[in-house]
Length: 139
Image (tube, rainbow, N blue to C red; front, top):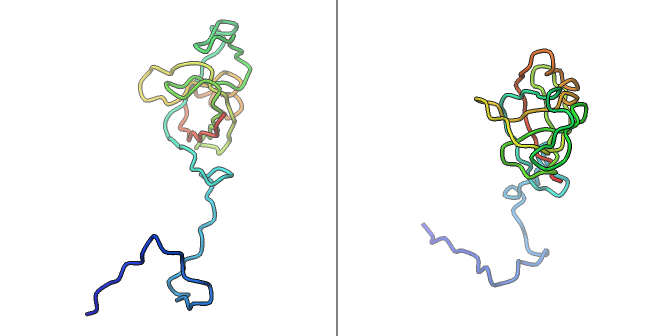
């Protein structure tokens, strides 16, 4: 068996006039739904969402802004304030984009706490909790 020769990484790539084995060339994959417009993979997480609102309306959030229970905001344990997150209810497929402006949830197994407005938008309000997928969109 002939020894395998590794290409010299310091040399330029072969000119296009040289033959290329087309069977060894793989087509580039199309960006998936979990990739950003620049090909950057967006973080995704699954878990349970809950909501909070009426008793907190008008109070200051951890970010310092006043909580608007009808707005599309959410509390997350560690995402930076201002991060936009698409929250999709896996029971019905409805989604909403929220902005992180508070900290929480701090109860077992929950990954995000939605404002009342966001919870209503994706059908979490009635049940109180629902399985969701979070997709970080950036700021």
